[in-house]
Length: 269
Length: 272
Image 1 (cartoon, rainbow over the protein chains, first blue to last red):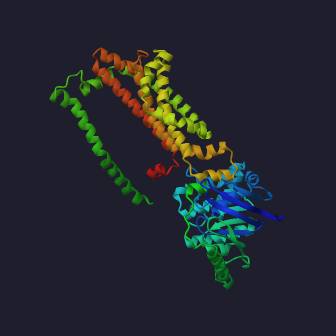
Image 2: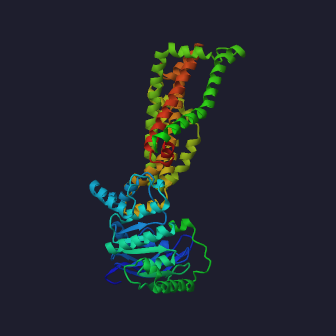
Image 3: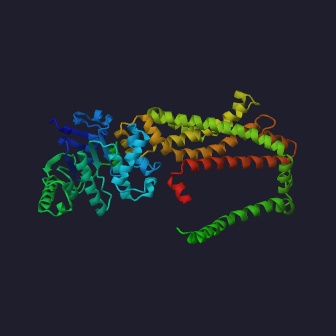
């Protein structure tokens, strides 16, 4: 484990109750400032892996260190923010109060919360919707609230589980740019689960390609596209080469084999 | 929206509202006319079976002091039982949701208890708390409210989206915060449904409890003694008072529900 590792996974495996091996022999080092995407076929355990890093699911074997601490200590220290595939907003709270939820848990006073919520609402371009309830917003707007909530307490590590999976292409590309800007400004580290090869290549410094169940890391592809990424990045020849490379690794690792996805109750425990 | 378009819209809404309520109003008028004229005059229904509607209304007026006092005594019994029973049920549900193995062990019995005719215990609570004491009536109302509120609240506290709990876990939120910020708000629609049922059960408990003995002024006792004295119009007037009381109790809970759940899609959409 190197000194600058934000996340260090060593020989991590996960076996669910019915003897289903979701993850096996996972080795991964995520350095400070890295943007690592986890990509792989459905049911390969990438969401489970993200939850293991966040100490939401316990690994069956192996060592998990976050910021040089056991994962549990890191969670108790609120070292990371998390964004799920679904927005997971509380209907009884307004947009502003949903964003302020982690700040309440950290014991921030009202004035400080209010100022931060205002910044966050601006960041995700939802000004004017502060007092709306989540179900009054579109799916894309709900997910922006969820991202604002994860970023509100400036965690050094962001765990994102297919956050843009449900959004339309235009919104997705714009939020990709927003995310990169925030990542560059804050110097945070991101672990990003996605189904989209092009999204993974565009955003990441490294793409970890996972094999079909039992999930293993088949290869880690370094993405050497220049920073900062712009709309032109998506048109660069190197970008297409890297998309092709990731796709080939995916296919070589058995992503084409039809796999039954894990039943939901196994994944969420 | 401009005022020019708003005015016809509200007229339209008034028209719709009249059309919506008209059938119900017609049914009420027909029912009262049947009670007033058709049954006594057309079908020769004797007053001891059902007194004429106007006789019940005049009994309501003439006996208003006695009925108001009885209503107040019985409502206090019902309300006391409702508050104690629902309060204990909510507290129990919190405990059972917090310590799940405990809750899982007790849940089948709670559901079973929910299905038994608890009102059958009314003579027993009279024996326990004293026939003339209001506490025997409060006790039976409380037990009647307890089980439905417990079962529904527990369901509301535990039927939370798992990711909502994972999110709180990521914030290292203590159980107290998970309950305050997620489980309890999530349970409120369930709780209010149960409280509305509870308000009805509490009124039943208090009136039936009165039947087995109580302060001579209580509404249930007024009904019982009026029947014994063949003063059926007073008995019917007292039943009418008990019904109105029950409806008002229910409506009050429904009003609190609309305020407490004003964030809820069903409430806000209806209002806008």
